[in-house]
Amino acid sequence: MSRTLHTDPPASRINRIGRTETWVRTHPTTIDMIQAAGIGLVFLIALLSTVRVSMNPWPFVPYPIRYIGMVAVGVALCVSWAIRRYNPAAALLTAIAACLVQVAVVGDSSIAIILVPGIIYSSAAHGRRWVSNTALIAGLAGSVLAVMYFTPRSYDWSAPEQVVVLIGHWLIVTVAWLFGRLSFERRARVDSERARMQRLIDEQVREREFAAEDERRRIAREMHDVVAHSLSVIITQADGGRYAAAQRPEVAREVLETIANTGREALAEMRSLLGVLRDEGDEARRSPAPGFDRLDELAYTASANGIETVIEWKFSPAGTLPSGAELAVYRIVQEALTNVRKHAVAPTRTDVVLTWTAKGLAVTVTNDARDGVAAASDSSGVAGSASVPGAGRGQVGIRERAEIYGGNASFSDLPGGYQVYVFIPYASDVLAGA
Image 1: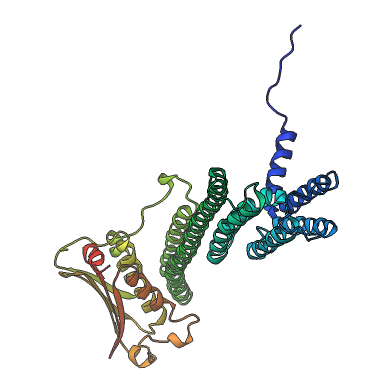
Image 2: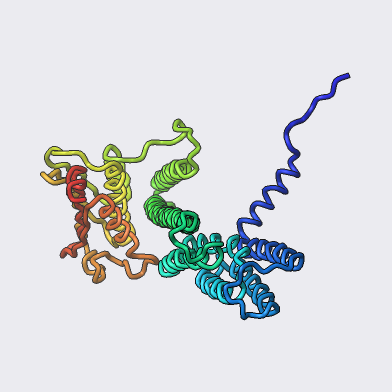
């Protein structure tokens, strides 16, 4: 009977290792303190287990003072090791002071040989420029003092071993410092890249917010145009049908039919808009966006509601409008006719003239009010607009639609009504202007 050997470590062990690595990476000062405590304990055991104090250059210093000095130097260097990443400047200055006391009083360099290269590395890796440079200079100078005081032939610089020992010390100091600088530069590059990525993320967030705001405005314009146009037709027809029902029932039936057709058209446009917002991917269920081919429908609907409307095209296009501009023109004309229907107090005539120019498409909607309409108009040139809640949103929507495609819009008072003028440039002119 054979058993299957599972070589993969259990998930719990992997999780423990991952948590340990994360804790070590996020608590560097705590790790340094633990290391310093361990090194200090080893040094204390070595100090208590030996009676020898090696080659003190100052023989008049009593042995108890030397031992006290050795303990003080060990404690200072361990403290310096513990704070080497948290405060590199204080760690370096503490280490320099401890090494000077070691040379002057103790006469033993065992613990310094272990800790000083690491402190030099940390000063170069985590300290400022002056801390890094001071660590290198102090390390090179300290190497000379160490060779002078702690080698058998301290003052005999003609001996080859003295030069070899000095070069060895300098190599240790230089290598530790260079590795520290490399770590500093690498971390600086990583921080710079992280900051750059954060800026890119912030820019993307702002762009998404701007795009969402633009989309909200676009949806608001679409909803306003669809709902306002359809409701104005329904309200106008309902008011007319109420008065005609008693005397001319056949007119009332026509009015009800117009109301039903308008409601169905509005419902279809709302479903199309909501289908785009859902992004369901079912193109067959979405009706195409209205464009130039449906301007005649607007004119027919307006004329059927008592506003004689004429669509006139002039000249031929000399270029191509930006994508989506046809829908914008349709909505602009729709909104202008809706304003006429909402504010006119008597039968009116509206002329919609679309003129192709050398630079783009000019749309002019002129309302010629009759039988006192002009007298009923307010200062904005739209009859009765002051009494209509939310009046003025239509003009804002018209101007926004034109500006989206690099165009402009203006509104003028006329003796018998008002005029809307919109210009939308060709796509090539929009790109050239950008």
